[in-house]
Every structure is written in C-alpha cells, then in structure tokens.
Image (cartoon, rainbow, N blue to C red; front, side):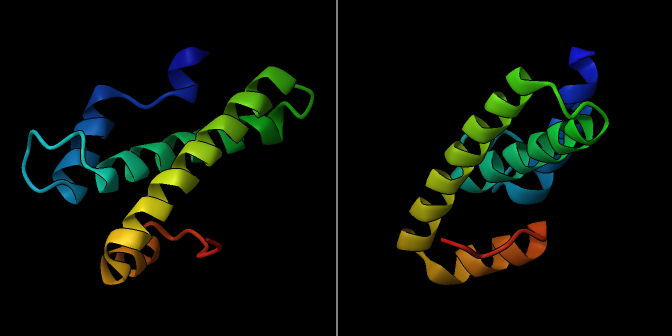
Length: 95
C-alpha cells in the first residue's frame, strides 16, 4: 500500500530530468515542487477511494503546506519561473 501512495525511483528520476537543471539536481525548489505534486496527486486518488483515512489526510495537508512554502519561495525569487512551473504542473495559482 505504501508503494501506491509514494512515487517510484523511476518516476522521481523522470521528474528530476524534466524539472531539474541537470540529472543530479534533486534539491532545487522546482524539482521538489514537482515531486510533491506527484505525491499529492497519488494521495488524493487514495483518499477518493478511502474517505475515512484521516491519517493519510493529515499527511496530505502537510505535503500541501510544504509545497505552498516552496511555491512562495519560487514566486518571490522569480515570478516568470513561478508562472511557468504552475502552468506546466497544472496546479492553481493561489499564493
């Protein structure tokens, strides 16, 4: 069950390759936001099937808060990068 809620190493490598500056760039804010977004989507699907799973819901809220902080950092650093990232990930711009 934990494998379905998290992302695989292969998927993380794909996200790093797509959003990172190079193949080893797993620490930049853009890559972290992309990985968090993938995890949030997986947890959202899980909660649709299991609406009473409050422990997972709390973890989801923590991930959303972490992503919100990273997005705020990116927005303050460079608004154009922020807009491009939000559009590419397909998330709402509500910061």
